[in-house]
Image 1 (cartoon, helix red, strand yellow):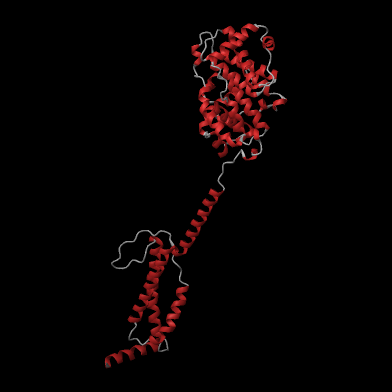
Image 2: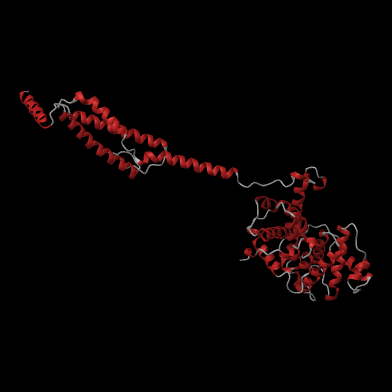
Length: 421
């Protein structure tokens, strides 16, 4: 006991010699211990930043990388606080016997103030920021879902129009799609004709387009005329000199089906430069209706064109250029491989690209046509090719028809070359 007292006295004497106050040594010793443990805490914080895990203590298993979640951040903060509390208790025990407990309250307050200024681990600082960023990203995704392009009901504006038959228009076009395969012909039917070829067919159709324009007939009449010619030639062999007769009779039948005022037979004889007699025309008419089994009511590309243009919310310019492009397709034999609905959709799509200079196929167009943009690419590229050479060569009937004020000079519109490039 005496030895202990002597040691304490010696200690306090040395303290007074160096500092001049009896309690400075205790404070300095306590501060030194805190400084040591604060360095350890900075190492812990650095480990937290590098590993994203908890405090590594003896016997702990290696911790995996921590996900950016609030619950785990709070857990780590609690562990750090417990560790600091343990460090403080160890410091108190280590200073026991030095007579400094009277300064503990002041030192604890000083330590708490310094701990408040202690830098927070980067992980704890960024966890809330990361969560806020994730919430912001989720809000952006939700906003994109809200403003995603929707399908427009194109029939809502015709609720009061009885001619629009809004009640069953969808059923009507569903039936057209089922029947359009019946209106198609084999794309190689011309190989069965001994005296005809593709070039002769193109010349006939180009001439009939001009006749149709001169007579000022309905658009439906032209499309049905071409359909009747192809279906008849696919079943009946015809000699070359009667090919024009087939075209005239097909137009006569289409007029009887579509027109209010039908051209008389004498008019057909006149436009053929009296190449055929009235008897020949009537005989060919009889042969054609029997060959086709009087089946005239089949959907052509025209009925789909009207529906698809409505889905595209078209204006006059788009209407004119779309019909210009699809009439170019009527002349081309190789376009028979496409269904009428696909041909109509591709014409509208190509018209949009030519008129606006960019690809523009909306969700509404895709919904009502049942064709995606990728499905239209092959047909559309072919249409652009026909558009580029429309004014060249001998078959320019369609170009001259649409290069007039009546059709808004649609033929002068620049082709959508970027579709083929």
